[in-house]
Amino acid sequence: MVATSDRDRRGLRRANEATACLLQELAARAQPGVTTRALNNYAVRAIRNMGGEPVFATQNGFPGAINTSINDQAVHGVPGDRVLRFGDLLKIDCGIRLNGYCGDTTVTCGVGGAQTLSRDRDHVMAVAREAMHRGIEAVRVGGHIGDIGDAMQAYVESQGCKLLSEYGGHGLGSRLWEPPSVPSVGRRGTGPRIEEGLVFTIEPIVVAGSARTGVERDGWTVVTVDGRPAAQFEHTVMATGKGTEILSLCA
Image 1 (cartoon, rainbow, N blue to C red):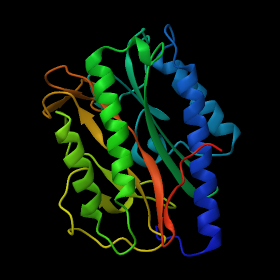
Image 2 (image 1 turned 90 degrees about the vertical axis):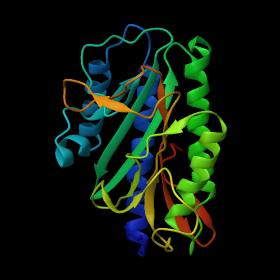
Image 3 (image 1 turned 180 degrees about the horizontal axis):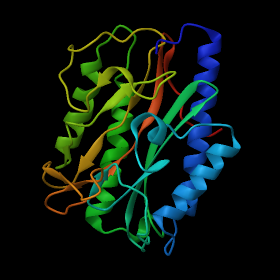
């Protein structure tokens, strides 16, 4: 969506702030001994109580309100009976539609605290977080979508990691997935122009080893074929003439 009205901008800010606050609560609850299903159940109740819609389920048929991907699970992890353990690298992706507008954000965290992570897991988490920030810094009104992927790819590869090029960001507004596609790899000066008010996600998925992936038997959960860890961070942003506004922050 290109948010041209105050109503659209307010609606998108509210939806993304609500999503970010729920994600913050989920990350705090992601403790050793908790199942990913328990996290999902908490999200379902919270979304219902705020009058929202769990768009992963309603718009894409995903079997959960959130994605919970652990260690070598890169993305689209289905919540279930898996018990979180100290040192797990957990990715939680949350999407909500609230009062006609969508919010979307992802965080990676170490179960039991970052100090419990192996060196491999800690490194890929740090690289993914910084890659997202590099992508956000590359956003300019009048610039190109390819500038974002270029910035992220250059940084990630300099750190000895790789991006999953088949997964990237997207526009969002009244629906979670809208144009344009925002690839996590790219070349500066290519792709659509970034308009004033354009709202979209930046969400690099970084792997410590090979970028080859497979899909688990559930038909959703994407895993690295070499078993090395993956990390993802995501913010929803709005391009403005005064700079990039991050919408998915919990005030």
